[in-house]
Amino acid sequence: MFDRVPREVISWAMRKLGVKEWLESAVMSMYIGAKTVVRTACGNIKGFEVKVGMHQGSGLSPSLFVIVMEAISREFRVALP
Image (cartoon, rainbow, N blue to C red; front, side, top):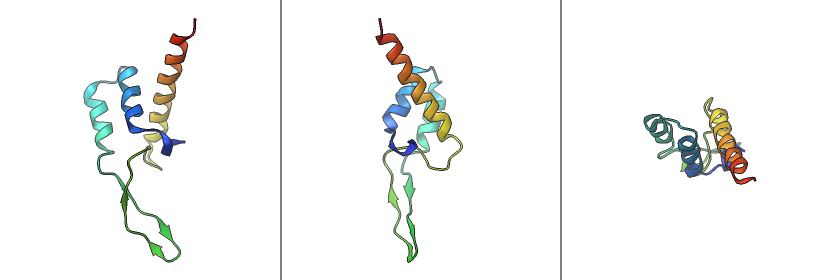
């Protein structure tokens, strides 16, 4: 789940829920130039940039996911009559 959330949505959700701008900037700066490596039985492949999703294994990712889901659910509640 975490690896499919567009980063623009993470930023939008934080703003929507009133996260201070400096904190949003700090969180989003962790994703600039983020790279990953795939390990195989034959060794690691060359690292490549990851442009979508949250960091896998990060303690912050579940909280960011909850923020995204809360912002989306608030949008639906507002849209319902």
